[in-house]
Length: 593
Picture (cartoon, rainbow, N blue to C red):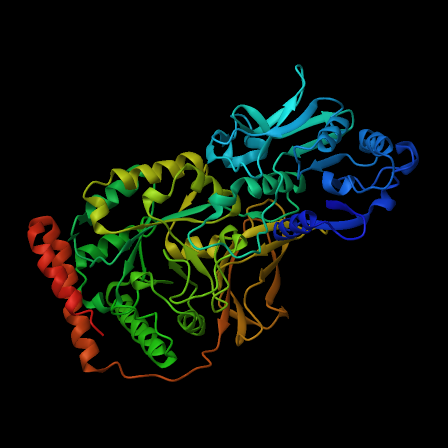
């Protein structure tokens, strides 16, 4: 499928932004001159284009055609003979735009009018086939500067896909042999533009998500789609003891079984030798429900916010040694994923994690400390952010921040639903259980798993014209399975690796392979999988900065005292809340540089 985008002298700015969005989704775009569409000929003379091509109609471009308006509108009314599908967007409340939609819809749509400023944008029930997880959801107040609605004929046969105050905002109709899709948003967001501080994708929803919905529906399997949907809970800081603060691990396992979730403990390597055998046995016996990952090394203030590679290397070396000892003693393998302490990290820490061959990082805060460059919309529409240190950063949220619309958005773009928890969240776990229930209800077939399994399997897939499947990976280690009943050839690409990275090799099921290709920032490899066959592929990088530093006695002493103060505060929160203030003040004192 191709998007055919008409232009006169140059591509219209709105169409340029549509091309960027379409390319991001994996669609092909073909800019064509208005002249090549033969406005002056009857539709029967023009012939039909390739089946599946979609004509993009932007009224601002059509308005510039030098032919008389009547001829242009007559051509529009018969354009279905050349194109089986038409996508109309950028609609303004101008009389010309009303005439355009009236001609394309054969009179079913009459005009474009401003939306009520206080009205809500929502998706009606029964639109799951096109709108996917957004069906039946209310998004929020519309954008009065861009959002309009359509006035339709009394007995119109249009199908409303999204509406504002019960009037069509996005709709679909069939006219003889043509499918027409309309979005009445005047503007389209530039997904490559830096977001203003404090804004999110929700502030731009109506100016890019409806367009993405229609484009992906039209493309079918020939665009990037989530391979599967994943979720995980991450509980920060706990010691592996039967009880820690408000957390009882036996009770936690009961909740996981009852409410169908998996939980990864963000474990501080400093505490490895303080693990109780009973807690370890609980994890060992329930790997599908309970797992652990790295949570810094000592969990000292901003330990991974430093730009000093020698310190970062020493921290990672120490953390690995500690968790290897943990594995030897308790036979529990730590997920090769880093959750940053206090959410603070630097560009350099991302480079260091890559050099030490971690799978990925996971964090609540999406930007390095002191970062001046903001995030773009497209950064928030991928499973992981990859712009920092050419290393993937998966985002997580608190249970209260994971609402219905967040679940639908994550599901649509293949972003795993990772929730951050602390022991206090289990004083009354209602919010946690509520968020889990929302995810299970709105994301049908979601896979709850350990954090490593989640990041390794959060893949995007696209079917190529030659019958092969393209996979876009967002972890340095990927787990790929062919669940079909026929063999497939796969091309796995990591488009974010970067030109400056020292990629040593690609491993497939532990065996070294040199059959990989580098193109610009991207690395790719190919393999053939038989039906039901699965394999693990991972990138191996070289640690190009080998300096190490001594952390010193003072660092270790303060780390020791801080950990004991934190644990005392967490446990005293249950027994004697009045003591918590004193312990936290002492903890703050030990946080001085």
